[in-house]
Image (cartoon, rainbow, N blue to C red; front, side, top):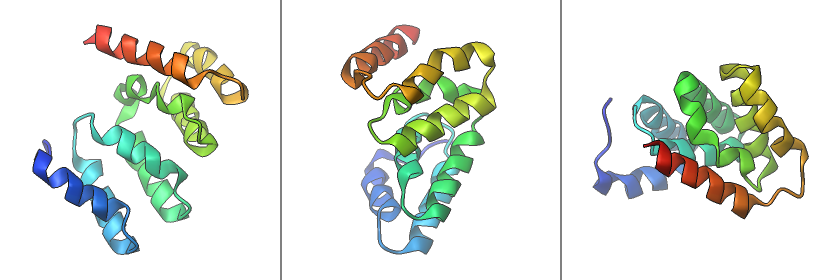
Length: 130
């Protein structure tokens, strides 16, 4: 599936965070089929969802994107939400080689990481990469 029209983003967002589990899973299924970058942060937010089925589905959707996903997870590995950070690093472990892991493992164990500074560096890298 190529992309979703921008005017449909708010509707999809409301389905993702609704109270109806079936609607949430259907919205996740739609997002997993979109092959552009913008759903990655949305799916990453759902990694910390209290509903285990939602968080697992989100994880599988991210993992299905393969190694091309890794550059887009640079901000998620610095998340102040521990579960999002752990799952992002788990994706690094499953989808990358040892060199990438050596770079990201400290962010998992360092509770005093300056998220703002590291986030700024990651954004600069993404901007200069394109």
